[in-house]
Length: 298
Image 1: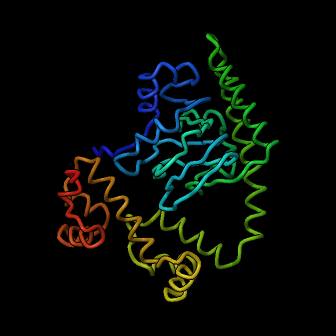
Image 2: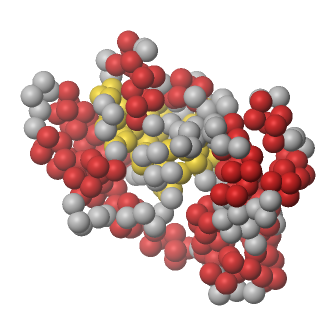
Image 3: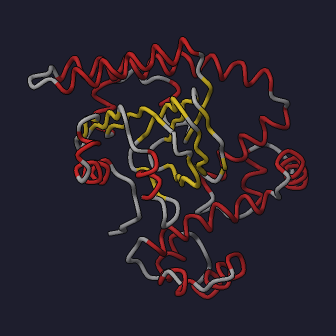
């Protein structure tokens, strides 16, 4: 059984249980986290060993300060008013955060999500996006904050109604979906064709890189020639398409090596390398380290 380094709700609960000041301002169970005053710097410390896999979906709204995470390969700079969503099995790492950062956050298990939305799933959360973010207006931020606060106070009641909790979660998600749709339409209209294709390319790489290593696969999915796709990606991002793919593969390998009991041969096989020797040479060429040295933390 693979033991990837994951930042689960159970781990969050254990982390918060170790700090009295956090327990007083946040509702934490193994199925639901409603964080009114999470310690962003404390959470950053959990990422010191590198990227982590989010086993459950996460939604964070930054209310003050700034943070610089890497989410599914892409570096970001978020400031007060930004809403950030990371889907199930998204890979994230916090590289820096301001001392005055304040945020609210919510996360829930797949089971609780299904109970809350039923068969009518908001499009933003139906699984076709691994992550998204947008800037809230002051009015939108205030409204979301109030919904979040209402959900927090309700769940903190000793005999709170589970049905009301589910309805409040559903309302929270549908409101975010409403705002997301507005931003998505505006963004699509503003983006050039090349930028839209690059965004689609990144989403494909984030999803398929562990098993699909060649440019032809992505070019075919985008209905482009490999040469044109490579030129387009380089022009838009300043980084070669193959480098984006390699970075995604290396990130997955690092997580598996550092936080898995599987052998190098097993990891190589799962990630569709022809053999472990090729796998090890590939890793050393791109990182300058052997797989053994990286696994040992040297």
